Image (tube, rainbow, N blue to C red; front, side):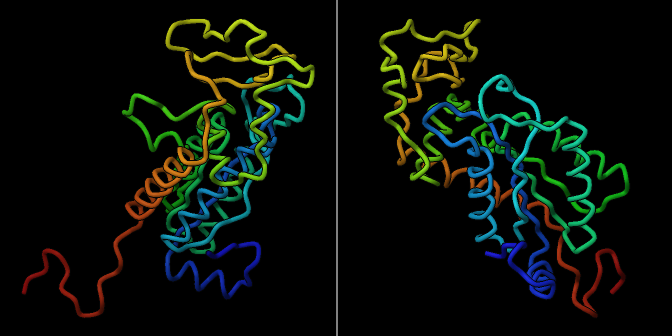
Length: 262
C-alpha cells in the first residue's frame, strides 16, 4: 500500500499513474473517554483509508491529526483548530494532490465535525477551478438507511472499531470502574435531553465520562467481532465511492468515438 511519506517522487508518480486516487484521513486529538486513545479519530480514519487503498491502489497521504469543532473543548487532551485554519490546510492539500496527478481525492473524516468542513473544502476547490473529484466521506455514511446509525462518540461503535483496528489501545476495564472506584451502577443512567437524541456523560466521576451516544445504548457492549464487520462494510463502501468517481480511461488510439460516422 503506497504510503506517500515513505515514497520517492518517482514511486509516487508511478502509483498515481496506475490509479490516480489520493486518500487522506482527517482526524483530531480529542478526549474519547478513559478507555480509548485521544487520537482515536485519526487512528480510525487512517486505518480505514489504508485498507481501502490496498484494494483500489493510489496513494495515502499522512493523516491530519488536528481537527475542528465538537463539544469536548473543556475535556482533557482536546486540541481543535479554528474552522478556517483547517479549511486552509485542506486547500493546500487538495491543490497539491491535484497538481501531482490525483483525479480523485478521498477525505475521510474520523472526527465527525470535520465532515461539513471537508464538504466545504470540496466545494471551494471546485469553485476555484479544481478538476479532481473530491469525495468528503464520513464512516457512518456506510450505514445510511439502517436502524442502527453506527455513530457515537467513544461509544459502542467507535470502541468496536478501535477493538478491531487497534486493540492494544483500548482498555475496556475502564468502562467498568472510574479512578474513584465507582461503577456505572453507582449513577443514574445517562439520558438524552429529548427522545431519540444522544446522551452525553459529563459527570467526571462516572466511568463513561466524555462518552456520547444514542439514547438507550451503552458503550460496554462493544466487541471486536462487531468492529471487524463494521470495518469491512466501511472499507467496501469507501472503495465503491472511490472507484465510481474515477474518470473513464482514455480510448486507445484509433478507437471509434461515440457518434463518429463509420
